[in-house]
Image (cartoon, rainbow, N blue to C red; front, top):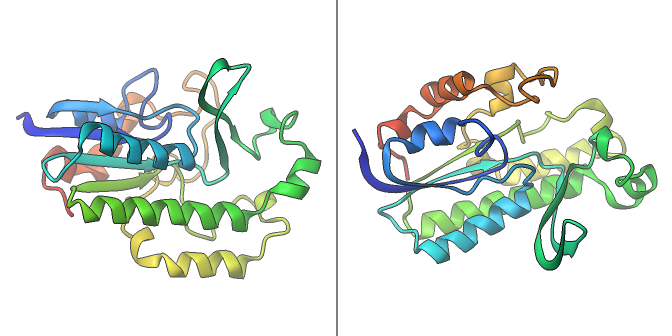
Length: 227
């Protein structure tokens, strides 16, 4: 059965990738499907794209929206640069803790510009604002995450110079909204341990995406969305 609604998906490479994702699998059940996932996206880009596309497509209560939040420690910039010298475009080096980015995110840069308090604070605000925007327009929506965003979830090295009490306080402030987010894909698919990056490049397979959708997003397949 094809549901008579438009479906919009937002996220990172766990939402749109070289192979079909959970979103593509669910999207086949809707008359129109728009996948605005972008590999490498951080949550600033995801929240901004959601806001812009609501206006561009006049997304309303007859539509359906999926928002998949990414790692809280990814950096986004809308700038010109070597990747886009003539016009501004989204630029992301990915996770600031990724060793492959250590030539850019140096130890000195980390010392001056990185804190888990910052990443947690702004991510929870993005989620809260997106949640409020969708609710205010009576748009049925669902939120999920690539990996857990509630503490204690960070790898040990990311807790250096972090004040857990402050991070936990942020999570308590936003508790009602954060607990409505579906189980993370890292936890559900990989048991909270990233696979070795080989053929699948650390991403779920198509069959794993389908299994995740069936286990946690069946109401999206059936079009029985909570508001």
